[in-house]
Image (cartoon, rainbow, N blue to C red; front, side):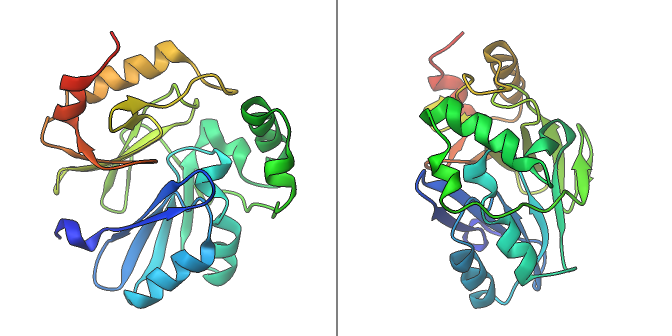
Length: 218
């Protein structure tokens, strides 16, 4: 697999990166389908890929809003996976959790009220050191309690969600956020191979080495 096989889609009003990661010639993992399900479905069809997994780096709405539409488009074809500590962002009671986060971020819930669609429950829960598809799961709390990264050791790739960005890292002022935990999670990443390419939840790709060198925090 080469870099060109990974499809990047920037979706939704907060410009979230949705990644389509081919597992083989026919199937793929969709990482953080944050919005615009029609765009994601079109990209899958264009590449002749079927989703085997929806992998969620965390539960914030801008990373999962397309999940119910994808579940409807591909019934019984894929597993939806999230860390159990962010499980409240899926399932029948998800609106409450999202409303709290959106109100904390924006002062009101209008952002989700206008286009809310009930979210399905997770099919499986991710845990530290577990594997799903080609990935090893790294539990990286701080942005949320259930934040994770997906690491493909074979190809030296890591999908970091909102834990690590190019030139920055995720906010910790929303429900479940913890700055000291996030800094510890970042320090954990910075002892990994510096050549690992990082595919973040927002913005451009980077590497562990570049962010370790350029970090502006202790």
